Amino acid sequence: MLQVQFIDLNNNGVFTDSGEEVYSIFSSSTLTPQITIPASAFTGNIRMRIIVSYNSITSSCGTYTYGETEDYTLNVSGGTAKFKQSNITEEINTSMVIYPNPAVDILKIDFALAEKEDIQVAIYDFNASLLKTIDAKGNVGQNSVDVNVSDFNSGQYFLIIRRGEEVVKRSKFIISN
Image (cartoon, rainbow, N blue to C red):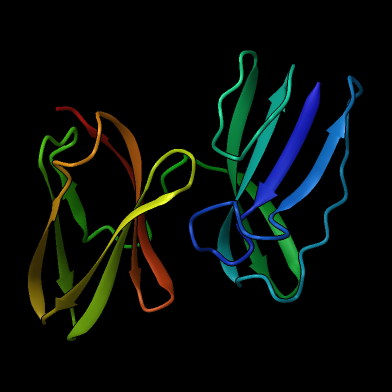
């Protein structure tokens, strides 16, 4: 079996950056890998993905015939990492709502801000390819952003919302057209 581990060291929502494949081995034995988190890693919650497959693994979001993928949250602080299992989607700011899901042509994002600030919406396909980026100016109070997704094929996508360098929401959504 092939086991590959990815860690999103810079917390940008994808595992494709240089150095983020942190462990890879072909073995049928029970494994206890030792991974050193670099000092340059994002401090706070970051994502780790472990893939075990009976054949090759081509990417962190690829497909395989037999195997399993699990996501974990690493809490990085003071040079140590604590593992805790989590769901794939982690919502840091629950005052953001993304709907409808599935979407057909427009995906709506509603959010509240305590101060005027800009946000960035990034949409990725399951191969971690950036498909669309929208920069939005947020005002104090309730805000709404409409994202035109009518040019996307039916399928699943990742949405990452950032406020500056901070990731405030990650979500999966479906296009059904």
